[in-house]
Length: 375
Image (cartoon, rainbow, N blue to C red; front, side, top):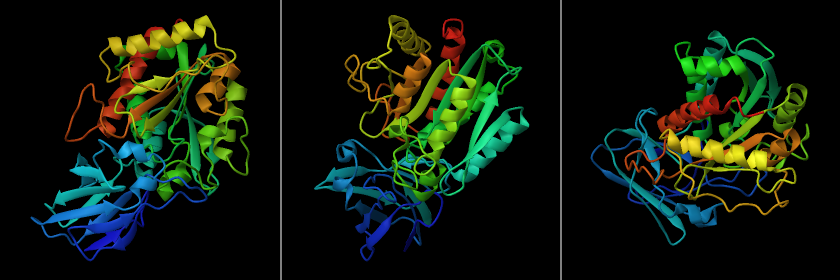
């Protein structure tokens, strides 16, 4: 048996692989950071029909160690069909097992969104008429593409959506893929009407270095990008600085920041109720967005989520709060689970890439319904 993680988004350390019934592993922390939770590794040399067991020995020390309760690891034989495997958290270790069907398998914290797929997503979007407004550079020199999708330049509204500030939250770029695919469907009358009023500015992956390195939370410098929106710099957070500069140049009438949550087994939003500039108009827009998303039957709910900020107590280093405050616009963080959306459980897959894509498409229906009232 051979265990490897020397590939895009790979992350594992082998401690002891002598017992195939209990292979001892550890998750590697983010570079220049104490955060860790993401794992992704390949096992070769399996005997079909044999049971294998794996233990992440440092799960109890991970960034969100309460998140392991109720969590099921994902596995794939072909890197296309990802399924959940029996998993338990016990004595500070995460144990999961597999009855092998093939000689090679991959395990991961969530269905990965590969960099190669990202490059295909960008190329396909450009072929279909998207505009590459600009391309920033990460600390390691990877491209951070800012796309514009719309009709003629200069539309009334500028709608911004960014994803994967936290690199381990791969569901965020799956969301963006679904959204981009629908935005570029010329047969979709709802989208045609939306693009007559608004143009979209999209950053499908804000943190390519962290995603490639198998980080959970931070970029190459160990910076949590979603805590850098009041202090963005070329030295520690050029990814945020790049987006902020273009926002200031172009304007923002709506902002969505797409994320994943380790602990809460539901899809939910977090708004800007704690901002100093929060107004009844913004409160009404937030309520309208949430109620419409529920109303169209999307996989979404409003009962579970983060505690609401008290008035004036928002953390303005977060993208959602910073942008909402600066541009006086509807600004949301959308959170998807690493586990399952318990309002509609699907045990084989849990929450996954396909469901994230569909949510991205459903959000466009809501924006089409609200476009007249956003500004």
